[in-house]
Amino acid sequence: MKRKLFSPITLVTLLAALLVLANQTVFTVGQWEQALIIQLGQFRRTIDEPGLHWKIPFVQQLHKIERRILSSDSESSEYLTLDRKRVLVNHVTRWRISDPLQFYISVRDEVGARARLDDLVFSELRQEIASRDFGDIIAEQREPAMERVAGRTAEKAKQFGIHVVDVRIKRADLPSEVQASVFARMVAERERIAKRYRSEGAEESAKITAETDKEKTIILAKAYEESQRRRGEGDALATRVYGEATGKDPEFYGFIRSLEAYEKFLGDKSTILLSPDSRLLRHLTDSNAGK
Image (cartoon, rainbow, N blue to C red; front, side, top):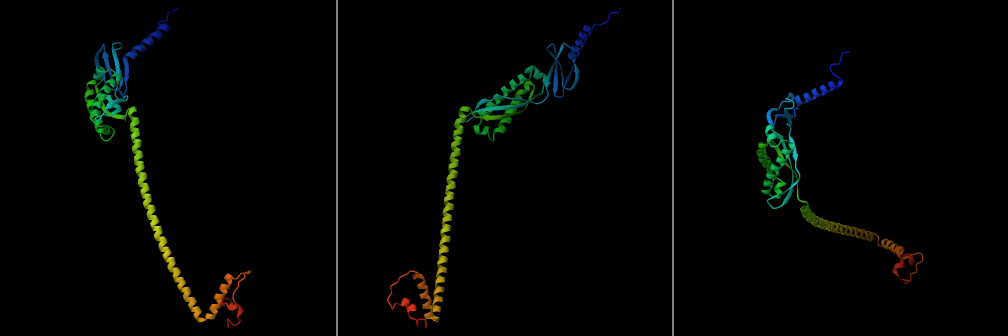
């Protein structure tokens, strides 16, 4: 009976060894990466082309390094402005690795790079903020100041194989113990402005009311004048009509006026004591009065 050349255990062991050997020999570099080959602590070569590559197994080590732009978001730190005001600033730094070998030698990895960059930005930012007033930092001088910080930081970061793309202030706040007093001053200022607006509104309202009352008085006076004029014209016309009517037939006019008077003061149960020769009753007692 023939013996088998390899037992199943041997085959599994051989395959595992081949896989380990292949893993130690062949590797891939993505388009977003670059790689360093280190042999026994010494630099051998840089790989910046994406694709499949090889190295000597167990002797050479692979260190992959990011090619993309990275960002470093710092914690808030307290700074002192030129006008002696404290401010909490949170900055963000955008950077990329420009020299992989220098980067590996000086800072090793991204954690070390972020620590070094934060130290550089803190130093430059402290110097820039100390030379400017608080209002300039949060207003029109903010962009030029950050451009200068980014430029000086980029120059110093070259020694670490890092290219600083940009540095920006993400947030600038007052310390918590200062915010309360600042907010109180802001509220007082807004209340003062609101009172001024209300006062100006009340003054304008009084002006409009006075002007309206004046116009109302003028309109009423003109209306009363017009009504009196028309009433006078009506009375004059009535007097003229009465005069003309009286001139044409005085007896008839007297008779009509007497009837109107009777209608006003004589009722159903009226009792009036008059002398027999009263002119008021002459049309009732004298049958020839209307002839």
